[in-house]
Length: 200
Image (cartoon, rainbow, N blue to C red; front, side, top):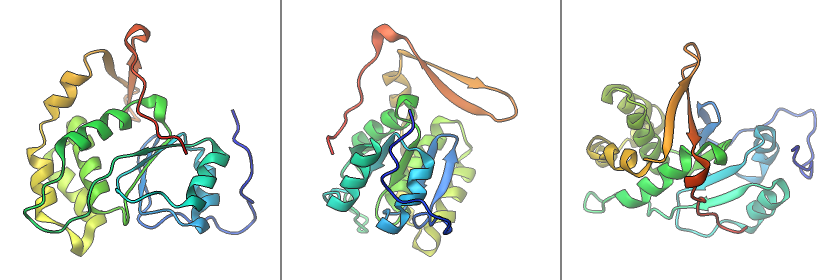
């Protein structure tokens, strides 16, 4: 169903959020969207946003989500730089479950700058997709740049992806097409579990 056109679309060039990129078909990543980015986000026809910060979502952004029928799924991860502060594994695991559920697609993942928290979640997704670790790290560092954190890389390397596989016993994971290498999840309807959705 086409979403209501409450954000004015004009002939200007659409402006994506900072650090925006497509992760794969139906999954995008970025820094925190600003009002100037709303027309671009509208063009993505998003179904969900995975927000990885603990701070409340701005009211202006919430109004945009409501107007576009976009679900906000918040996983509050503190943006700490201290080595002693660990990334919550369980929170990343829960976010991954939402991320790979195609019922939530198209989906945008974002934190504040689209570097560390977003990079960790995408890095763990890549491990689930059987990427080699060097390619996972290269992608993380491409977005983090000089702000790359060794603690994030260690977290990605140590993340036990088998925990996710064990949680998804009711899901059939298969490839669709050899050229596109798309990954899709098909669900046994009798075992569906609803994602945790925040009302916006």
